[in-house]
Image (cartoon, rainbow, N blue to C red):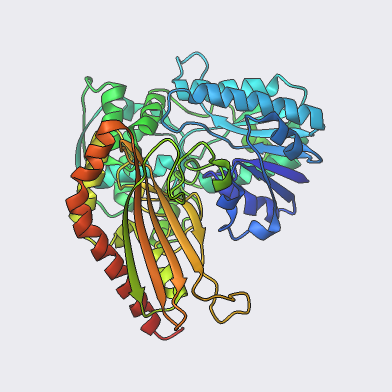
Length: 508
């Protein structure tokens, strides 16, 4: 089939594309910022178009000449209007698919009984399914519960709660039953239903072979990870709001994302109809095996996508006309404050780029780690994301990926100075721009530009840029000036030194 994937930059969408290709399908991906797919191994095997599920014109173009649509878009990003945005996107795709004559839509939703006072998150998942099904195109709605896989939001929440807290006081939702499913089984089902006509126009519940409480999942994770049995003390006074604040502090999830997830854990999410597994039969992965597979992927640095893969920047730099750009020397309507450092490096531009793009995560920023941990902790306390997201891979980066509390906004690898295309080795040849996603009174960027020096070495220009918002923005910037004066020169020096060390190593 010719399959359109909506949500290819997300956790499930980024993993289902290679599965569709392996099954022989032709794939088109419609994403708001096509550059976010540039780093994917399958990028040159798919058609990528710009598309927004809330924009009818781009959806009409994306739906043209396709046989099926996989709708894997999720708007839950910590903002309060996510349900309205999800509904608007569902209506747009429903109508565009009908006009294009698409044969079917496959949608991944959430489990939960309609009569169970569902959380806003699960209500929105069900409402999207209803909106889709109200059109003329037959819809297969797959409803899943907790998805276990390396980098999934559910797995990361489970992993951090269990590993960080050997003793925990927990709310009543830890006794709620759920039916977790391995992400590999979700992918098999998404691809498998395309070949089974009987799945059209149906709501199908999917889950793994185990039904467990959240407390049981934590204890089994601890056993698999080689941790001592956790002491779990249930208390009745922890409201969902307090629980989400607690989850936000302990895990990489920001409180705004943790809240709807915690609300959903109050609802029992168990498969009550096994029709899906009768129509698309295969041996399902147990919870224990799913955890082992996920941990192995994390340990092998082989995490294809993460819960934070989607979101962040969604427009190309040329589209940001109304937004201050750190590349502008001055921005009409505001003042951009800067800290600029330049450093000569004896390594070639390519090695300097490798050193720059390895920043963050467990490697840090070549400055005292406690300062970054402190800043991340403060961010967590005020409802931000903190440092817990880390990075997907210690060396590989792509546009749109998170790096701690930053997001990669621009990424350009320098050309080989010896290549014919590199006519001027001293021209700007490499770029990494990180946009801050922590809570700050303004807009902040950390940018690294790399150029050749014409003599086999390179030059690093490191810039911290800040667009203050009102008086407090200026107080924030100038209050941190002494710390910046200590940190940023040291960072530039250490990056250059790291590049020189890389250049001195023999090529494997």
